Image (cartoon, helix red, strand yellow):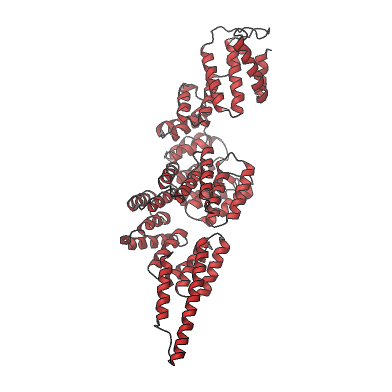
Length: 566
């Protein structure tokens, strides 16, 4: 047993810090005396040293050593014997069998390139491996790289090759579905194993469910996953629970989404996947203290995932610390460039800072990664509206409406753009009515309809709409808007109650504070005007009611001015 064998054994034992130190010294010996180690032995040392660097996450250094090792491999002689190392016995053909695989070295190089975000170099090195020699993990990496580069046909081929070798590779199944491969075709690739192994009949339903997910048919996806959850063998599966939460979020059902995320947390306190969306939902409801606690808990689990950074970013975004939110979003993207929620966070922060064009780039990338998520399109439309690009916003909303179909979310998005143009107010009303007919408690539709009624001064109708919505969900914005409408009809006492409830749900809601202050000012002005009128009548000896008085006209004008400031 020679010194190289000892190094190899330490690699197998995972003693990488020891490997790094010893291999570094041995390589220096070889550089100073090229005759000390044979080309084969030097190749082994270079690979083992690179492995130790890779383990220490020194990817650029590791890649350079792997590259030198491959060059060394090409220079090897065809002899089967190796010169003795430090007086040890010559190597035998059995030693040759133990040489690090050239294919494995290329795979490690590709991993280094991926970590360094040099995806083209990763594809290039993997493409040098003959097709027949590619292992499932090589095909899986190639498929993911092809997909990211937009080479869909090559990605599909590689995913299918993974499934040919490993029919139960479920991430490969999801990869094919995300590339618009039909669910039936994907299921056919796994049919033999499903039929040959007992208790795997649920897999065909699972494939069908995620086929619905990737075609944007979220309602049928929810039904399919719920049917899986009811099966006793799959009940309380944390992955299914997380998927169900995400689907409820996608259809705009925040209440059930939060409930399912909470259940997933109870099943697995260390869950990270999907917690970025959970944090976003909590922030949207004004539960910033819960968001802060969630972010802290996730950081304790792992700071090497995007999710904790995204959650903390939303806590900053909703606290109006936009620069900090921007930094946290950028950090999350650095950790995972495919994190849709991180891209949305950074886009929202850029928009809030007035950097609209940069925000548009991030929202477009989020759309590319997740073309069935409405919040990606909503963010982009809001950017267009913020820059007064009504035409672009209208085109985008119309395309989403045609692509994803007339559901409550697409109808509301289309109506939001129509509300910006005085010529399309009636069209906005029609779209919102259709959205509410499909889903009467869809929050964004209720808010936009209330805004329209406020413009038209249809306060009683707006109050009825908001009360009906509050019967099913108690959120800050609905209570605040109801307070605004109640002020308009001079019901100051209940308006004060509604503002108080809104602030109890979100103590940082500045509009509720402003509404309360404005209401108190109006109320005092009205009382002062009424007392003045009474004094004037008593002084003149005239009697009569106050209907049609100048004070009421002034009060009405004040109310119009107040709504105009919102």
